[in-house]
Length: 612
Ligand code: PTT
Ligand code: SF4
Image (spheres, helix red, strand yellow):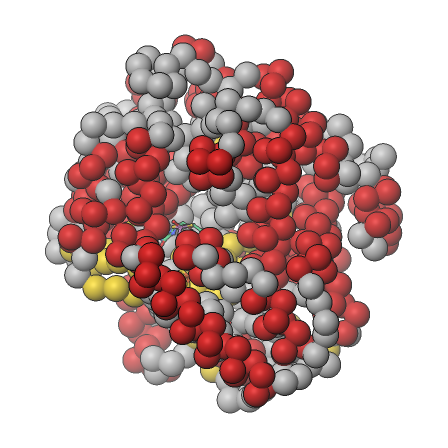
């Protein structure tokens, strides 16, 4: 087999054993890699109903055929497990040297099983696997552990590690990498913490098997050059992802005050231009020529890397419009290993719940200093409030009651990213039907919707666009495993990706093959959901009630009085189901599953719930 190493490294932390397992070419072609591998492996190996924070859960680190190979921007890694936040399959994608190092060590997938009896970290070097003592790192933040690992294992090692939030099983703890990245929003860091696994360190010395290495080298070099040229021409990485903040404010799509409002007069203080002005350094993932990580000094003089989602959720969503203070909240999330999106959503929800008399406390919108204290309380589950908020907005709302779940800004338990969609139905649908809960990664339809389509439309063209983007963003890029930014941000052509894939595998795939593989992975994740929640209804694909509430509409500006409409949203959802071949609950029909070659998976899921 070419293009894949053909091997899985399976490690058991309970009895400190490991083995190297092979997989077939049929498995590789059916599931491609990354999210495809992870969703299939976890479906086959996890029993529904298990405790996501118990030793039965498994952590999967999965790569794809172009991951780690020099080409635009392949230094990415998928991390997945049963999510403790949402209760079903969850994953994330972060930049890390693990991408190339794990493949060079000879593996496309790492599966971590069981749980250690004291804090450990894994050290993987080709066919050597060590379970090393992590006592010196335990209790410390990710900046400390990153440095500690650097000193011990050298700067070229691939590293994934967790902070205090993962250790304390905060349900939205992420995994961090040495390159300043973070991933696994639905609590994949907490799964690592529950296994007493502080870090994974990987170094490899082998060649990644490729069908035509000369061709791949040529395509890769040309691609990296092209991505850099396109970036320079467009000027995108001057403001990087935060270029979108001013636009979101202008089009009334900014998350302000727990998404109560859609714009703010002070938004310019934290926009892309201000971020670029405050830049002290630029960071990027491995194998990338368009480095997008911009760092600034925070209000305590520390270096903090800011992307749009971080700024949107830790800034306007909690009414903080001072870039240095936003930087400070962001630094703490990175150090503790808290997901910035969920952290900002949870803080916003808490302030809102206090304002509405559902929760007790002295936290107010705009109070960044109290926000910092709360982040520590959450990361360490300190006190009643810290511990409750550490379970995410929806679970906290269930305790607070008084209809506060209506304004817990999440879908399926995962807090939504920084787009306020009460007057943007297509993006609201994209959040509603995202595979793992409220994530923008799957379908970022908002620019298409506002620039090239009718904003107020709930027509089938929006459902079609969501599916098209899910196939590209949630499918192709999550399965090949590569960063989507060259395509999405600077127009690097999608047609290049099958060329890379064919050069490394020797196959002859077109984009169509990837759409089928993507649909298969989406259906697989839906079957995870069905197994865990047999009473699933279409309401599970609805965004929070507050987006439908007239009393919450803008009181001025072009979107004055506009909110989502239930009937229309429901018909948009039905367009999506019809185009996808899903039933009225939003579950793939037997016919759809059959078309995708998922007969045995359908039979397995059918033991737990009815398939139509
Ligand atoms: C992603 C989510 C995002 S999406 C951001 S900012 W973004 C937040 N980043 C966090 C962070 O940083 N620290 C932290 N403690 N928590 C954070 N949570 C949030 O996590 C870097 C980029 C970005 S920046 C995006 S959009 C793109 N995401 C990609 C993706 O998902 N897949 C893919 N194939 N390519 C992508 N390219 C871009 O990568 P999650 P990252 Mg993250 C510090 O992982 O769980 O998917 O959540 O991965 O490497 O940091 O993303 O405006
Ligand atoms: Fe990483 Fe940004 Fe480069 Fe993508 S564009 S690989 S997120 S540095």
